[in-house]
Length: 77
Image (tube, rainbow, N blue to C red; front, side, top):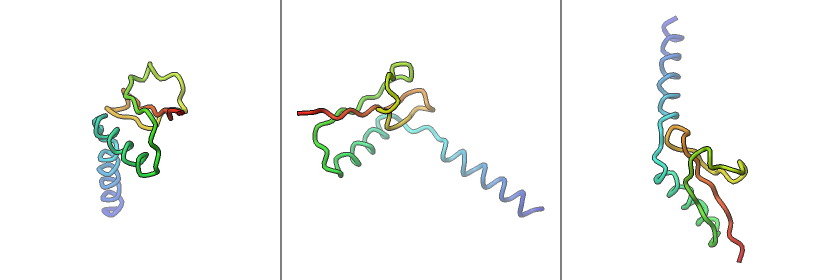
């Protein structure tokens, strides 16, 4: 029984750590680094409020407790 209680407590702590809000600028910088590592040179990343998202396929991240999204658009030359 003690092991079960310990497992439940550890799971709750791990879940709350994963759900911590990440600042949008920090998340945007991480996403930008991944995009640049893949060699993409012409793109736009924009932080917008949830209600401003028109195409869910453009969303690449969620931040500030899910109140904002980061959208990606590849710019054609």
